[in-house]
Length: 319
Image (cartoon, rainbow, N blue to C red):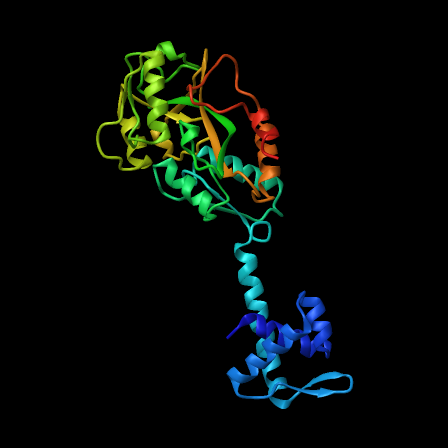
């Protein structure tokens, strides 16, 4: 059944004149007449009778009208569910406990009227996420392509905000009592970061980090998830890992794990946002402005070479 024919039928029935229905729908009266005639042929009934004042519903037309209204309303809801600006803003994050999700949640708590849909694509390759942005599956993705020239022409990447790293250790670790640590103090430590996927942005990040500060970062072994990682740290006297300062981790009280800020320099993981080059979802603008309002990191700051822009520059370029 042609939904535009059903829509034309509904408006003609409600307005009582084909010309008025045509004017509202932005088509000719002939087009409305043809649509209704086609609908009548499909249903094998007459829906209208012509009068001196316009058109009136037949008994069959009266029986169809409430159902036709439901069809039109359902179509409108379906279109609104997927149209940018009319549906919820859909943003891809690496995980629901990641810094990206935490910052988005903070924004939503201050702006609960925002229609926001936070999703996880569960892909390691940022080019797959870029393809999802290009296809409109998501409106934006918190992923970074270390060579922006490889992005599709209709997808761009802006700097969202920096996530400072912290050292996470158990209570028996030699640095457990430290209030802060420097990258120099991390040299020769056993730093275990499971789940570094080859070809991912975080693989490139840790490659540059280990080279810059002569660190020993081990990604060996299967990644059994955060719970196993936290259990291992709690039982170890020499194992440590690196986590984002805004990442949300929960562990049993008896683990007594310690999160220690890294300073001089602060180690910044740059979080980027990929979005369409043209016609981005209007809900992105206030969220990008929120990123620019976050507290700057303590200087000096180390960032990898592929960082794009700085937060405020990125916000200006997003209009």
